[in-house]
Image 1 (cartoon, one colour):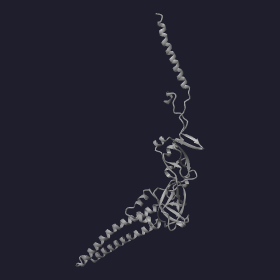
Image 2: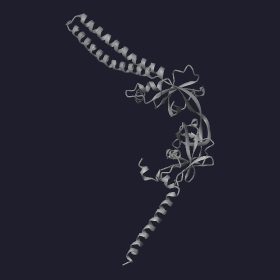
Image 3: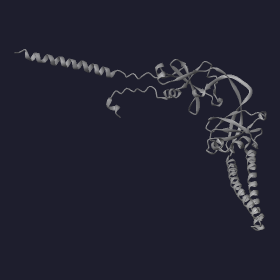
Image 4: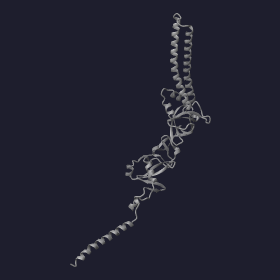
Length: 349
């Protein structure tokens, strides 16, 4: 009977010992420092390097292309002015009204001629009407014919005025029954530039030039014809170009045009590889299978196909042509911040 108290004490001691071991393990583990996740951005040899695993590159659909030396057309600058097209639209409306007026006057002249013929026939048939009625009908017919001739003469004069102000190509296109060019200009989807080229281009102007808009956007302008009017403030050969973009009327822009028979060998960075950050242009270069670094791209070296690289790029460099914005986001993301929450109630805030 005296053994029962001892039997009860033994389990209690074992339970207390187990609780002490658990508490020791818990507080020991809590005392260990929390290791933050390894940063994917680091500085290597003075350059900021973004590390992305091959699996992450595939998941993000990062695409690459190798740079190579290519023949690059040398270019020079010229100046352009965005034309005010309201006079063109006014002349085109006058031409359309004159054309419609011809249709109306032609019908009127046809009726008055028929009326005169009837009156003359009646007068010849035993003078069934007076001679004065025949004369009145003849006068009306002659007046209607004169109005019709005047309206017909108005069309070539209006067409000549359009050509004198805006060139042969524009005049021909906007006077078509259905003009895609006129529709684009009236809807604000296109603009016309008067580009003053050097006199060496007086005979043959380039088919296309590159226009630098106020938003630093490179636009391709297509040649229309020589300009019958020149910019009095510039010396050179004026030509008209069409830009499929709305530009502020009267603004002065810089255009780039190719220099005939002058090319050089250089590295061309495709436009798809270039991103904007901080008001400057950049491209990511792969420096290792899982590492990328951002390098500056001179924006003033832009061409119609891309950007001419400087000494920061070499032939054989591999640049990111898709996914560069993802790399930029990763580079700019705050580093060294642990996402492990040690106190669950605080994670709810």
